[in-house]
Length: 157
Image (spheres, rainbow, N blue to C red):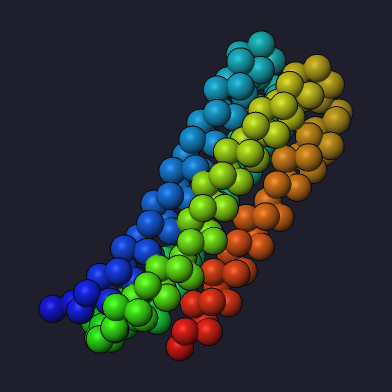
């Protein structure tokens, strides 16, 4: 049976994937809605707007990566779970917070920038690179949050 510390750590790991994934799903959906209108008018712009739609999906992947890292370190994936104290469980939960929170909000912010980029592509497809660059700038903060989560998880060994 899992200790209460292990349960807290697992909840943190699951929430890292869940919350960041919800942000990504919302973000990809937002951009998809905007992109659908552009493609309905000009199907040749599909590949340009598809790249913009994919960008907010990375935060969900970062949350999943954090979850796998934590579950692996806890021995859950190998079938030999550790016996954690409650304090250790909260430490793992806290390690998941950066990607959990920043992942959610950066996915939504990146989606807003990508929706604006879809508008750029609709009016001037040759400026697609600039639209992608503006949306990709938001990614920096998701990557920083992922890095913090990974560093903290690795520091808990």
